[in-house]
Length: 384
Image (cartoon, rainbow, N blue to C red; front, top):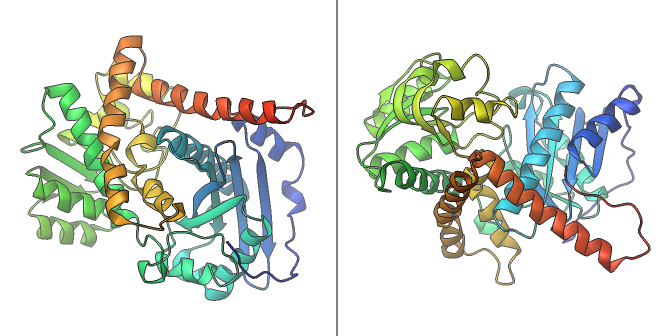
């Protein structure tokens, strides 16, 4: 891939240099973290590359009004690690990375900012390929592509895979089928009550697919009008933003931001299972066993929501993007999650523990193989 870059210097914020950053990197097994600013374009960004053991890091670009640089850094670290686990669990030859840009996308996102960000990505020389995420769109990636070729998820008209939201939603449905078969002996979703938190691009598409499959959807969003529109379109019911987490349902589907499963919300849950598209839904690692103690089956988010990255990965094939190939690979999330659920039961572990262990074993094996090819290297990188 090729692209253009200029000689503009990106300034590392000296306040964030030193042990606070490196200690945070060590705690999550990060390979590289880049902090950059371009005052002329209004760019303040963090790019975190967690692992390139399996291949170049792939991850979206999130634009969000973080309250502090520390919050932006922490989000980038957590999300990039999640991308490593996601690609590894999906069997992809890709590593994990993530970029976050500090700002309100409705006010601060400009073509100049996106082009400046593209120059930053280009300087990494292909170690990281970006795509859309919260606060960015397929059209935004076209602006980024003006200054770097290391960008994916471009419109299909120019050879990309386009909006990955439909494939992400299809992957969530495939995961629900696996959980339904595991819990109730049938993958049929007819009549199942599904409470969807967040009806953005993925949540709205998920509502449509589930309705077509015969499920009963309950929708909620911080934008109440968006929830009303989706409910009207699908014939579903609208819930208040503060009601969805405690709704009585078969499936709770978090499809907004992460961290929604925490000490406050878990005691209020009235669902049989949690299967959603949001990244890092568990606020802390201890919340997976906490859910299990309540008898709630939690499907690991990085397995469930892999449809988007699987869709983009098809772009890198020798024949370019083919939607039928992407669809078949996304549908395989059902069998992949089924295997994880069976293995978790057999070992007395949570599905999250089982899936994480499988993903990290694959990453570590790749690290070991790379080290074996370079016998002079004495310091090994691996995931935690």
